[in-house]
Image (cartoon, rainbow, N blue to C red; front, top):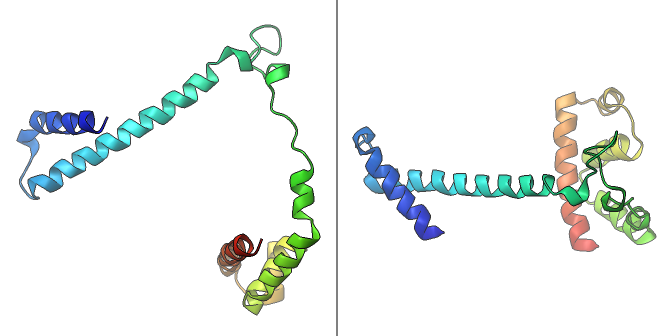
Length: 154
């Protein structure tokens, strides 16, 4: 496939040679063409995979009012409560508490008020004396740090 993409690159370059202005090195120009060819290849490949899944008749009904809906035996199954139970396990909660304790005080307060206590954004901003955009930045950074901490500790 790599050889085909390189060959397509040279073919495209020859076709559009008159458009090459010489403002960059030929290698840079060819690399840019190749990059676009690679992107197009993967774009087409991902689209064709999606279409083949959607076109599969075994997953969907073909008749009646439910045409196009999930076939009963192929429909997605309900999530088990195991994932939810694991989230609420004592082990997870202790690691989460430990990770929260490593956050800067304002970050921890913002995360707890917003996520754990499900307080409205305006109330969190008022409580911590911060702007809404600052709150979202703090939450984003806190979540990134918590995710990293939890992945290492759990």
